[in-house]
Structures are given as structure tokens and as C-alpha cells.
Image (cartoon, rainbow, N blue to C red; front, side, top):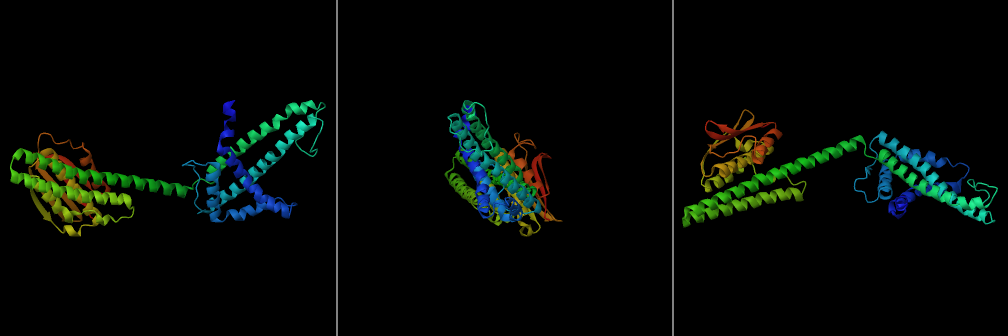
Length: 385
């Protein structure tokens, strides 16, 4: 019994009833003007529904009254963009008029019928023109059946509200173009989150690796001069990491922040000096016009080089590193080699190595990581076009 009466305690029940009554208020204005042609409002609803903004207004009403408080109502508030949207709005307005008329009839005549049946049972019949009033030989039968119209009213209001909600989702729901746009927007958001995660992993991971290597080397050396240089390198690396972190947070704060604020291969000397300060011997060879590399390719190349050097410091320590950067034949080639230690990651493991391959693939290039001739090698080829 409690479950059956629970809808009486829900605000949605009454907001849906209000939604059903709204078109009745508008139709009643016309009936005061001309009651002989009650079909005119249904005819006028057709050109009104063709106005694009009407779909927005109907969507807002449906969200607020049919499904209040639901974050994902499945109802669009965008204006009509196609003729299909307009005709869907026409069907919605016509159906809303029909449901509103049924709700008005039920909420007026069913309570009056119940009252009239009670009055008839008491010997004082009223509203003889009531179309729902039943006549029985014994007046006391009316008293027994008086609750029936109230129950019918309760079921009718709940049923009409449910029908209106289902119809609103079907007729006012997003069109195919809107669903595609929403899907594309969500895809862009996921790609942006993935890119930000890679940015944080590469920049902050590199800085922490350098700091750990520097601190360990300074403690092992026991040389005050070396310790001072190590602290200076840690400070410089920390500042660079803070700059990278600020760039990434800027992307979160400002969706339209220009990507040009991110570092490129032109700024690669900072990475090389950081690796050298950690004790690694870095041999660099640059071939071709690096400054002419397109921005997206140069930025991803910088991150690939950063992750490669981070892996060297993390797994091999202060070893000799050979870096080759070549721009030729429409391709940017990055090649990083270092002596192969005993505990380098497998080619398919590690989020950093996976990030290198993902960055290359996003630009239509390729990257290979793994042992090569006694060295650990990372080679990435990125097309410039």
C-alpha cells in the first residue's frame, strides 16, 4: 500500500500535472473568444512548431516539469535545426494538447463525480449533467462507489504524466546531428585528458627522475663542491618542472589557451643540460632545420626526447647517451641510444614507452623502443606533413 501511495509524496507528480495543464490554460483563452471552433488551437500549433526557438522552450519546460532535477534527462534544449526537428515538434505540440485535454477532463469531472455520488447517497443529488454519473436503483450504492473516481483520477494523472515524459524523450530528444556533436565533444574531452596525463607524466616524471639521480649522486660523492652543483641542478630542474606544470594547468583553466605555449625541439637544450647535470654524458647531433619543423610535430618530438632521457636516467643512471635529431625528406627522426643495463623495461611495458608510441601514432608516425646491438634504443619517425 505504501508503494502505491508513494507518488503522492513526490514533487514530480505535481510538476507533471502542471505541465499537462499549461496548454489547457492557453486553449481556454481561445474558447472564451470562440467556443464553436475548439479545433483552431490544434491547427495553430503547426505553424508555431515550425519556429526553431519553440523547440527550445518546449525542451526547457519538459526538463523543469517532467524530469526536474535529473542531470541526464535525454531532452534537448537546442532550437530546431532541420525539418525533421520541426515536424517532431509539431507532433509533440499536438500530443501535448491531447494529453492536456484528457488531464483537464479528468481533474474536473472525476472529483465532481465523486462529490455528486456522495450527495446522491445522502439524498441530495447535484450536477445532473455530469457525463460520468451512474444511476443506480439504490442511492447507497453511490456512496460505496464514490472513491472509485478518485482512484481513477490518481491512476490517470500518473499515467498521463508518464506518457508525456516518454513522448518528450522521443520527440524532444536530441537529433542525430546533436548526438554526433555530443559524441565528438566527449571524444575531444577524452583526447584532451589523455594528452594532459601524458604531459604531466613526461614533464613531472622527468624532473623527479633528475632530482632523485642528482640527490643520490651528491650523497654518494661526499664532495661539497659536487653537492652544490647537484643542488643547483635540482633547483633548475624544479623550476623547469613548475613551468611545465603551469602550462598544463593553464590548459585546464583556459580551454582556448594556445598550444604554442608548450616547449618545442628548439628548447631541447634545456633537456640536454638537465641530463648532463645529472652526470650523463650526452652526445648530440642535429641535422636539418629543426626550427622549421611544424609546431605540433616539434612539440611532440620534444616530449618524446624528454621521456627518452627520463628513461635513461631512471633505468641506466649517469651513462653515455647519443642523441640524433634529423630533419630530412619530410620526416623528423629522433634516435636516442644508451648502453643497455640489466634492468631496462621490456619494449611493451611502461606508461612512458607506451606514451612515446602513442604520440608518434597520433601524428601518423611510428616509434620503436627496445634493445639494439647492445644498446637501449628509442627511435621515432614523425612525418612533417
